[in-house]
Length: 108
Image 1: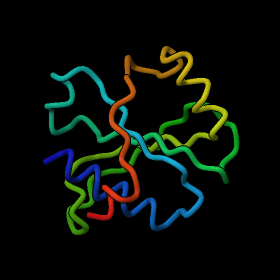
Image 2: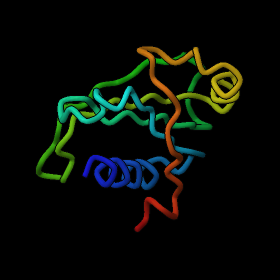
Image 3: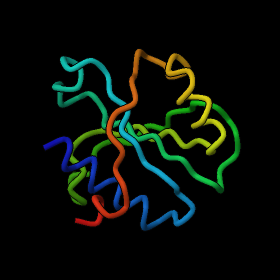
Image 4: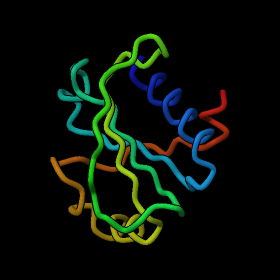
């Protein structure tokens, strides 16, 4: 269920921000991810953002739109993404890079 909501959220973000190159899940350990209070975490690589580092922005659940989990959005530049790909330890809270949610998969 959380995966489906994450895809729906990513799809909405792709539609709102055409400059997003890539959206990727950020994941904590499986026990934390199983907790419904653990936010969906999306890493958004956006050409139009500024290089501010990892600054998660929290959003409460919004059940009326089908987003029943809290979420954290981290927006970074392509250059910052390249740095994370080389050094995963740049991610906070023991987060790991999860699956890529591409535009096609998000549009389902």
